[in-house]
Length: 191
Image 1 (cartoon, one colour):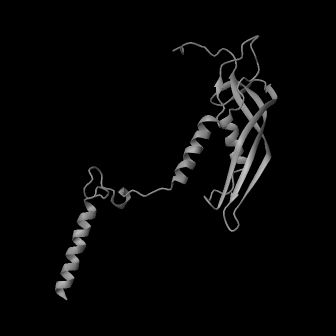
Image 2 (cartoon, one colour; image 1 turned 30 degrees about the vertical axis):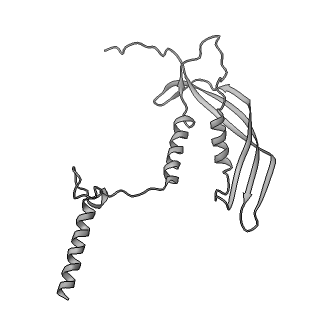
Image 3 (cartoon, rainbow, N blue to C red; image 1 turned 45 degrees about the horizontal axis):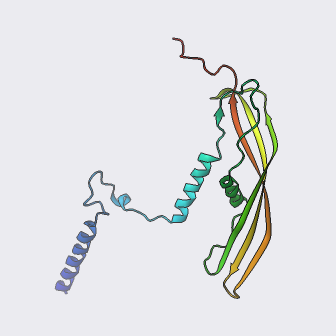
């Protein structure tokens, strides 16, 4: 019995030493020893992709930039209409594609055509905004119509394919940005 216990103890010690020398544990790593926190935990690609999409939307589409002042006699219309990427991301947020189970239930949007139409373009009167100073808010509202063919493939219990060739979604996208007001080039600060 004692011999069996000692063989088991030596085996557990050898297993512990083997695991501790793989580079993933705290025994062989250099630097601060954080215990079990230093062991990497696998993260699903779904959550990683979700965070990347949130950052992309924040960086590209969810900010209101501050532009230079409007010049006298210059154009006072918004020049940038929504990009196709912004329209498709808005469509995915408004109406996500259902399904996504390969060979069981798949949904595809094919033959996509986007029509963009500006419906409003106006500038608010100047006002004081904290951390920005005197600014004017420029509004541009767009109506985006997305035409596409939706294909639904169901693989179980009865395999079949449904094709809707006349799908249409209407999205309203707002582009807002600030324009500075007044003399913005004040030069160096007086001491």
